[in-house]
Length: 403
Image (cartoon, rainbow, N blue to C red; front, side, top):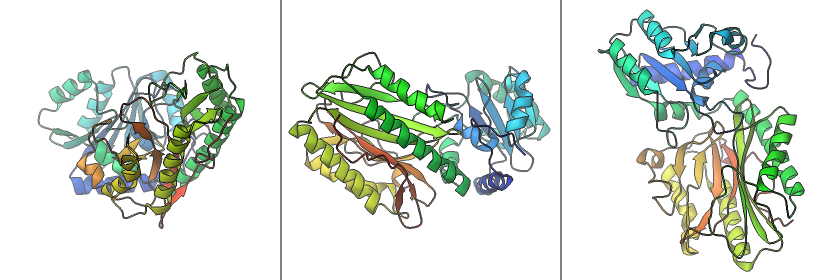
C-alpha cells in the first residue's frame, strides 16, 4: 500500500497496471526496447514540473528524475538525493529506487543490466513537447553516447504524451476534484477584488485557498488594464504590485489542482460597466466557447476546430489556440488558430490528431486585436466522453461579471 499524501495521491495497483500495459503495447508497435523518461522543470508554483516521469512513478525527485522503463523488465526510478530514497519508496509505484547526484551514472548502470548496448531507446522530455522541446541535459546525452555507441536513441516525447493524455477513471476523479477547487479559488478571488488591490495580492488569495484545501497551484497569469487604454493582450506571468482601478478589465489564467492534476480557468471580468467594445468582444468569446463545448465530438480531428474560429476572423480578430490538451500542463493537440504564427504554426500531427474519450482539453476562446493591443479570454477545462465534451469547471466563465 502506497503511503497516503496529497502531493502524490496514490492510485490503485490496477491503475498502474493499466498505464504500463498500454505503454508496453505501444512500445512493441513502435519497436522500442526501453524508455528514458526525464523530469526537471516547474511552472513556478508548488508543482514538480516532471509530469512525464511522474506518470509512471507517482513521484518526482528534487532537481530532476529519470524513470527507466524497459519493455521486458521492471522499471526503475532514479533520483538525485540518496537521503530521499525511503520517502520515494513510501510514495512511488516503482519500488526499485536508485539515488545518486550523477543520475547519468545510475541510468547507464541500469541500461547495462538490461543488456541494451544495441537497443532502441526512446527519450522522453520532462514536460510538454510543444512548449518545452528540450529532452535531457547535454552532460547526460554525451555520457549515454559514450557508454552506448551502438544503441539507437530517439526523441519520442510527443508519442509518449499522446498515450499519457488519455485519462483513466481514477485520473478523471482526481481532475474533477481539481475542477471544484479551481472554481472555489476563482470565485474567492472575484469576490475579493477591489479597486486598489494589487495583482500580487490577488494571486496570494488563490494560493491561500488552494493550499488550505491541500491543493496545488502551479502558476498564474494575471493583469488588469484601463478599458480606455489596454496596451497588451496577455496578462503577466509574475503578477506585480500594479493595482486594480475602477474602470479595469481583469484577465486571469488559473490552473489549480490536486496531486499535480489540474484544471484551468481563463477568466475575464470587469471593475465597472464594460464599454460596448469590450462587451461585444466578451459576448463573442463566450458564444464561441459555448459552441465548441456543444459541437465538438470524439472522432473529429484537430483540423475540424478551425471552423470554430471563423467568427473571430469575421469580426476582425486573430486568436491563439482554441483547443489545447490540459490537466498535467498543456499537451497536444494545439489547434484552432486564426494567426498560424502565434505562438507558432500548427503542427500537422496536431491537425491530424483524432479526439478520443478520456482526453482532457482546455477550451479557450481568445479574440485579439490585429494590432496586438487588446484582447480577453473565456476558457475552461473539459473532457471528451463517448458522446461529446463535458465541461468540468462550474465557475460561470461565460457570464459577463462586474465588480
